[in-house]
Length: 290
Ligand code: ADP
Ligand code: MG
Image 1 (cartoon, helix red, strand yellow):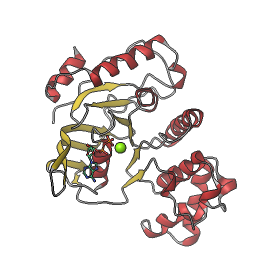
Image 2 (image 1 turned 90 degrees about the horizontal axis):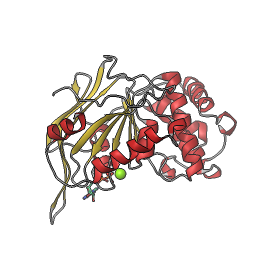
Image 3 (image 1 turned 135 degrees about the horizontal axis):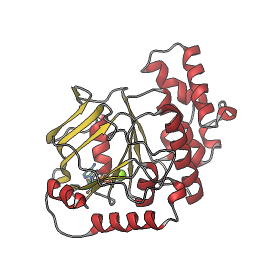
Image 4 (image 1 turned 180 degrees about the horizontal axis):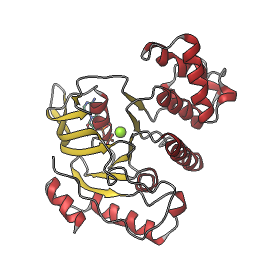
């Protein structure tokens, strides 16, 4: 597919997460090419996304941003290999995605994604034994290492129901990172948290990224969250999701929140998301560039 068009970084706000892997000529990891996704029920066909294309490069923090119902979760499920496109292709590296695999791990919004009968460390270690074939001792070691990274080493033997929502999400993140997937898929992982915890978790995710430079595809419907977490943002139109624009956002971090530049970007994205008019993807990209 054609190369993505990026808007010039505006304002020059500096941040610790200012590198842009795509711009730096990093390796293309995930390629989504004109992907349409549908749900077929007995009564009707629901088109979730229409001809969506984007590329994710190694160490990208790539955000899918769009209103509720625009097909973000369905896209993530397709990349995870749970939903097959009706048209278009999804490639990870050189291989087309044909089904689920341990090279892609999903973190969901829900706090109940951890089996409640396992302790925290067992929750993290279990997939390492099953999917990564680690021995019990190796799995536990690696699990404890990642629990330490998310600040939960002291809760290794606790059961999930004794943890707060934020702590449960930290366990889910530790479990996902411990798998060392080629790409981490996150579906609104902080959306059910209170505002303060949400900010803290965004900050922690960026710190983890700064240490390990993993590749993450992050879904959100929050413009602010997209700007803070992402280095690149794909804007999707309301249902069915089509690409509205692709933007660079690597210059922003939480320190940018109150700045005029940040607020202008929020307003601009809001307009791009909600202004009417269809227009195809290429036109949308050109509009953004103009
Ligand atoms: P988002 O994550 O952006 O909120 P989704 O990917 O969950 O959007 O949904 C996209 C569209 O597909 C919506 O119109 C939704 O109602 C529809 N949809 C989602 N899941 C199903 C399903 N299992 N069966 C039928 N339609 C569905
Ligand atoms: Mg969703």
